[in-house]
Image (cartoon, rainbow, N blue to C red):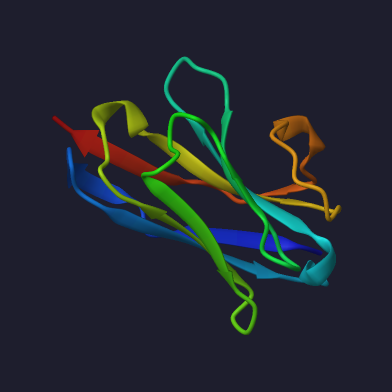
Amino acid sequence: QVQLVESGGGLVQAGGSLRLSCAASGGTFSWYTMGWFRQAPGKEREFVAAIRWSGGSTAYADSVKGRFTISRDNAKNTVYLQMNSLKPEDTAVYFCAARRSIYISHNRNEYDYWGQGTQVTVSS
């Protein structure tokens, strides 16, 4: 069974940086796409970034382009989300997700496995 475990969230001031990690196990991830989503209180879960495990193609939400970078470490089966120039509106629970497809999707309903989430809070 695929398991995803996020870490790296916390409290940071506006303009600061955080790096989230997602450790994946229980699957052959070379055939997967990995994504990061976030959910703020009272809002729907929204796409942040995704990466094709094989080949490394990436996609980003417009709201984070130029500030966030998604990457993966094949040897560690870990996906990262480097978040720079953080803004208060980035405050949310961030979730790692895995999709059993080599094609990137922005649609949360097309992801098959989810982590429990990690809280990111950006103070102004």
